[in-house]
Length: 284
Image 1 (cartoon, rainbow, N blue to C red):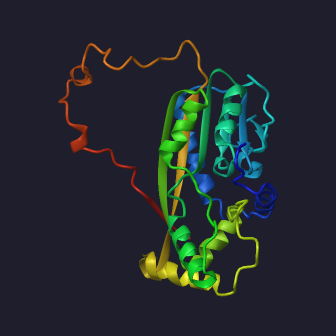
Image 2: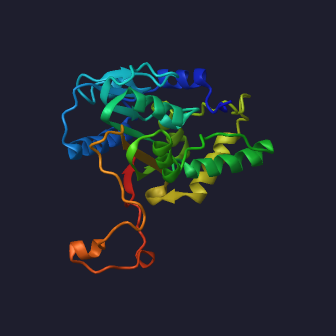
């Protein structure tokens, strides 16, 4: 049986009281990135769909798109869409592979799947200080921040779901706040506060959040007496299989080196590791 990560009623309540007019900057960032990917594809989509818990801001991202919530099963007709976007919700799914499989089934052959969700580096600072504060104030710890997946793990979901030409990449955004309390207010406005099924249900001691805020300021300071918070957006791209798509050669089957074809020198990758994209920074 699939383990239950999310309290669906709590998540729905958090989404309902979200104030995205105040805290939609990460959605805007995600939209810009997805728009670039759609421009690179250079294809006109005639039957798109968007899966999201935020229809009020994603409903008009792609013209004429059918917009459905992250229910299980998804309300998408099989083989009906040439584009399916899963927007800013996958990190709360109990069965993310199942969500992507359903999106793939909703695609026509050679249809495009795109997803954006929070990744594993998101709120690492808050996770750390809340664990320490709970240990200090309550004598133990409970889950406070969802265990979001690393980009490589999320990329593997595409292959498990049967999508072709899978690609996963991420963007980290460093945001500064005047205090940890302001960060928590932003998370409430985003609809991203704690909806874990195994969360501590009792009213927390009054000292818990001030203790966490003090620890945060001490451990993760930013310029001008502010604190820093990390958000990671993971982007997933895959295609419904089709006979026209390119397929990779078997290992060792190539007859020419890539360096020869490009007229460049070959180099040792271990001496030149690939770096993540540079962090972006914003103040809130």
